Length: 107
Image 1: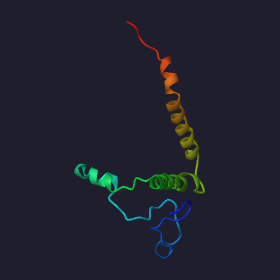
Image 2: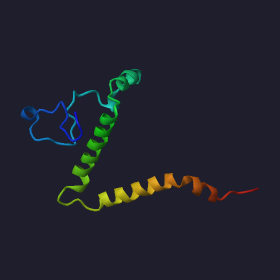
Image 3: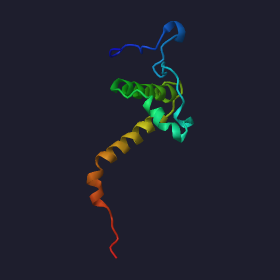
Image 4: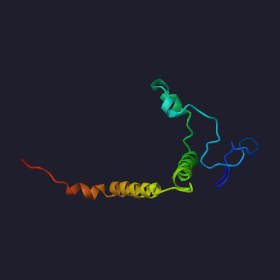
């Protein structure tokens, strides 16, 4: 699988039109339904290659796009998602400088 190609599991005769938000691999147990004793084997079945991780982020981005950005009447929710997400990222980046400005009670 090269960069920009369809996933190897995708078959247009079976799946129809390609959806970038869908996983075309073999379905597995959702994480919310995994029992505590099965967590190790569940993580062992995951594909941990950089391309698989990038594909997971891409699918999550497209799910977000389909749900919040691309509907006809999307509203203001995607704007607030971006604003609050960027606020959290920049807070984490600047935390080292911000923590020196704490107010302490000395008594």
